Image 1 (cartoon, rainbow, N blue to C red):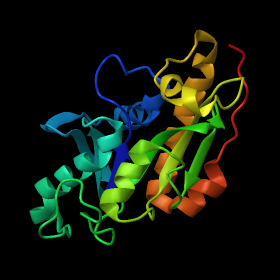
Image 2 (image 1 turned 120 degrees about the vertical axis):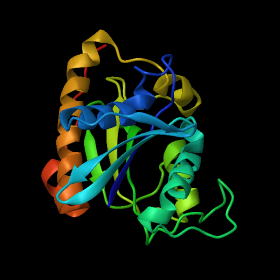
Image 3 (image 1 turned 135 degrees about the vertical axis):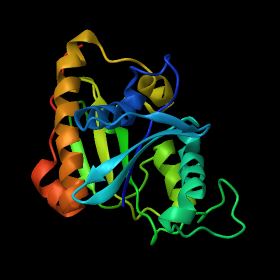
Image 4 (image 1 turned 120 degrees about the horizontal axis):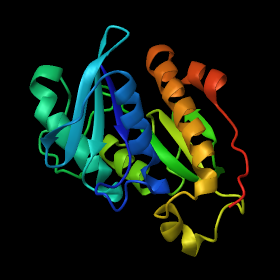
Length: 216
């Protein structure tokens, strides 16, 4: 089974923000495969299909970014009987190590404020880099050994001061940035396909991409 988690915030007020690139890539990936999201659980929407002969599950958390791990655990609880997932018997929704990383290894899609706009970086594992969604997933998985596709959102002026990060990632892209965003989405969908079929190492070697400064 292949499980992909797009990271973002639910609601129309966040739909076009930098922090929702994980959602945008996941939605475009689903659209190209003819898959539709359904409101399966209060904590998440999901779409199902197949890729390279394996079951494919696309998960869109509805718990807000810093509680993304809760959505992952809720999905696993709902599916554990027929999917054979290992869960700690007495785990809470956000208890560290609530999921067995050997049973299911999700791929995460997320924005990255440290990368220039348009950059796509595939990694087989890594630190959260301060990303609250990745931190939440790592907490319930008991570690950082899961693939991720990072999507650059830094503008032409580079990384903003730390005190401005929260406002910056919740801002929308400028009209001048839209072409770069569309190109990044297209590239990221292709990178995700390679990752799911051939693995993170191959996807990183073939699909990692540098961003380009875009004037505001």
